[in-house]
Length: 247
Image (tube, rainbow, N blue to C red; front, side, top):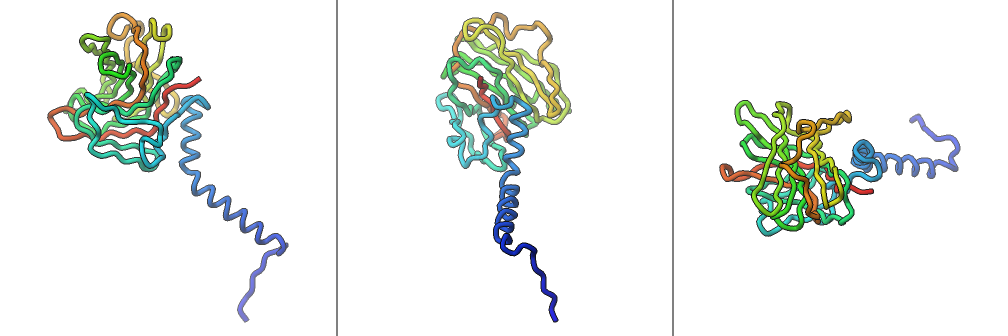
């Protein structure tokens, strides 16, 4: 005779199986939810990440590609909470920013390039290319390949830049704009790197100002800036998440 198997408390079998199926379904769907929650907690708690790039388009993430002097990437994919952009020239993926938002800005970025000058990082601007501040990870040397964090600013005139120490480790970091000073009348942002263990490093020597005097313009956009130079057709950069800063 074939062996028969049964379940105890048969009257509760259907409910038990439904609960098990639901739990398994939630576990399957929540892999990215768990990752997002851990990242948000680690880098800012409830005030943290505003874009995880889990939607089908950047517009659904509440962001947009800037026009005007900026290029639109030739290809953009959002998969497994990673945004991948293939661009030539300079592109800016931004979110509109509240006037009272003087909080630190963060982004987890990686640069798949070995061409000197290519970069990916954070940018604040006033809606134009005349007043802005950028903190980016850029290729500083081709052979052997090295990277550095560069801070660039423009306040209506020429662009000024300051470079941090060179980096020889893989080109993927959590970049931070550490906001300081009085909101929009006398302010600055210091470039910092974070590791996944929570260590933080200032990419400029202590006490060094970014290009001289503090800033006095009011930014209205914040986001991720990408750049690939004229010596190549395109560059690939990745972003895992972006935090515009919130109270």
